[in-house]
Length: 446
Image (cartoon, rainbow, N blue to C red; front, side, top):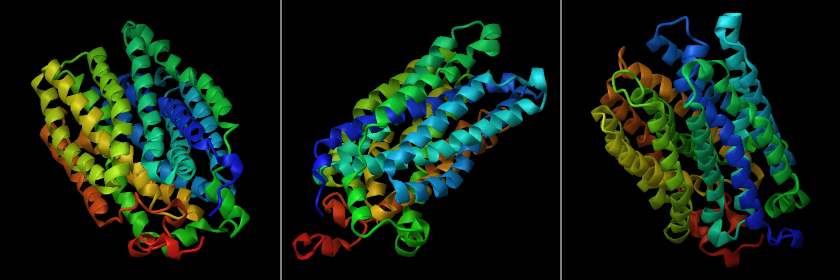
């Protein structure tokens, strides 16, 4: 397959656009998680007892994940029909708008039951936006990347996600210093209002990015698929199931980011908001370095072994992290939080954009990644709500939550073991030929 001359030199630009755009996009998404754990129980659900209010607030966090599969169907179809770039711009603008509107919402004390309804509606829009962001950014970077460095370049998408989470955490560290009265009235709104800057900056970065050579070649020669979903389910149904199972690994992130934060700052443990936000900030800082390193390793030894390190290791280290919180030792919590989330989880997190994307051909890649990941992420999103119920009425049964998280790591392990190893397969042959045939590319004509 020939590469358009104008696409030469685009890998770094595509990776940069993916990193920055994803960072800005997921800044919006993650400030909601922090607010759901720390603020919203007192602003939108203050008519309930504290435990119930927290449960309801965490449920709104999961609502976006329920909306994501629906958004994936639409945005996956759109991306495989008209290109990756347009989806990347649309998702960013939608996320910026919906997040800004959350910052403008009245509290329950002001408008009663309408307040949480409006909150859920905005959260649904966030979920639809996030449904297409990672799949389109990962497809863009994978299809621009040199064949022997696809893991490294696609990892920039998840590096950006961690960067967004880091920025969101630092912002909440600042507002968390406000007195409760100011924090609950206007302070929590500032990070959401800042999404206007997020949307503008992201648009300026992404508007000049070229479409990928793989998609351009597909459209110019064979043409785009009219119904990508039909082709996807006919030719790649097994890989879609693998991606759904693999995406459950995101439960580690949601448990770490939301439930563990709520548990550590509860009366039963008593750690401060600021100290726990610093655990997340430092873990994400370490992840920014760990993700590209794990991805580079996957370019050398394969996607599966690196992914398995992350999936199996996360099941173990999350147990240790929640145990550390239960002891009340901040030093132990900080160290194990960095190890669990910053290092070990980064192995799976850094390699899945290339691992999943390489399972599909160009004509259905965005649909396959979007639909597969978002169904799995939907379960991961509600893992926080399930964890709150499993933890018991007083929210202290951390060991049950740890076992629940470990159980959710089992399907990703099975998915990785059953998947093909694709790190040496030429880009134009991804998702189209058997492993035996792809080892002899010289016999194949593009």
